Amino acid sequence: MRNIEIQIVNRIAELRKSQNLTVTQLAEKSNLSPSLISRIENYKISPPLSTLAQIADALKVNVSDFLKGEEESLSVMIHKKNEKYETIEKYGKKFLIPFFDNAYRLMSPIIFIVPPDLKEIHTMNHEGEEYMFVLKGSLNFMYGRDEYVLNQEDSIYFKGHVPHGTYNLSNSPAEVLSIMTSRQNLHTGITSYSFLRDHLDENERPVHSKKKT
Figure 1 (tube, rainbow, N blue to C red):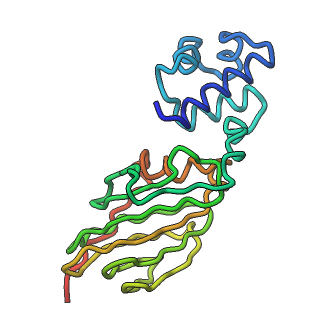
Figure 2 (spheres, helix red, strand yellow):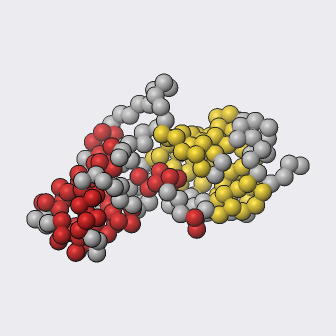
Figure 3 (cartoon, rainbow, N blue to C red):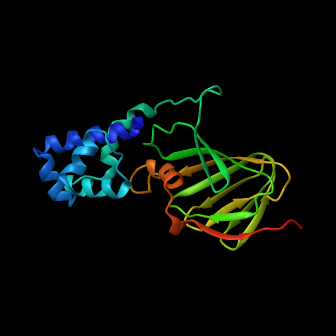
């Protein structure tokens, strides 16, 4: 279990006890089983966002309240070049994520690598806004029905609610810095990373494959 997940579980237990609720009472209020609440509080399972939302409603708080106090550690965060990234491989790409454990923030920086000759496009959409800067190589970017070619040191800024995706028709990998605003997503910055890690199939739409011209 990750540090951020431990913090959330501890906060749930803290709020439950402050309201003088037993595990059984919280389970009844949230329409969950007592055994599930007990397993969550004993770090046996990591609750999905839907379960966190049910618990938050039962405790009459927002999901973001489970992260209370996290913002105090946001004054300065440094990721040194020799430190490991949280790595997620999805859609044929590799996502490198610094500051994974500190989710209470407005911006979510991600570096992703698009391998050469990747023609399949998976579009996604999300709340907030996003900025991309091409660190190396060139990248093909689809935004709604529009398509763009972004070369090294090109950048783009866009609203996240429009379906968008990337592919690569070149012979070299592309490396891109992406920064998303994220607190709008279900009241907490953790959602942007959960979106990549636990993305639902109905929101993952392969549009088509591109051919080199």
